[in-house]
Image 1: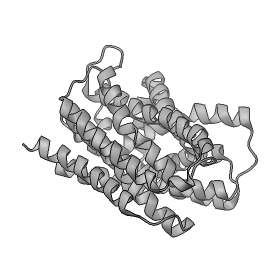
Image 2: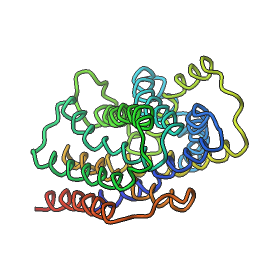
Image 3: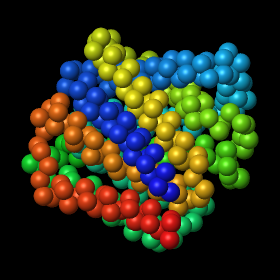
Image 4: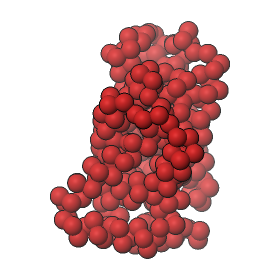
Length: 311
């Protein structure tokens, strides 16, 4: 469990670049749809190179065969877990600063529990308590910055993130069920290719492409600037490739629903890194007593996950 927690926090550090760089692109006037869609175009490029290095051309061919043989599943899981999730994240960046988005995103700790219950998973009530402690800690961190919060940020920045907090674990759990579960409504994909986290991220990225093309045709945003292209490439590398692969790897080696919930709970660390990034790039408010108490609760919640599993 300690290994899972550490991997989750490392992933959280890389994930936090999403919120900070998205705010930077929004401040610069870049359209949210390019921030979202370009990330996955770059991810497919980067992951393609990684997979080519790992297994050669045959690996790429095998992955495309796996995608085509289960294209409905990968399109659904990719659209929900990557498409809807990140489109809502980028849309919110136009209305809320990085720390608000990162903090609101922590609702996924609780949302994951509902998703797991929907898929028939069971776990002790203590897991709810640990998740609640983490979520309260996140709320306290943001309470310290209430002077910069307003209703518009809550409605246009918060609500889309709350929806996204369900989309991401749904997409991830669909993949977990396809590989490890026996859910009657999820196709069973017993391919060894799914043991590789890069392969799974590549498949989900491919599955999200139809959504991006449809949105680009409907919205028709103005062309992205060079800085937006560079920033989305960085987000794709740090958050899309590194963070997502580490996160899915940790989820993949989790043995039961308790450990899956613990891995998902480590996403709470993103708010810490987002606050630090905001201080550096945007001169956001520094930490105060309430923030420190909130961060303490987040760490306590993660510690309880570890202690409970090793008891």
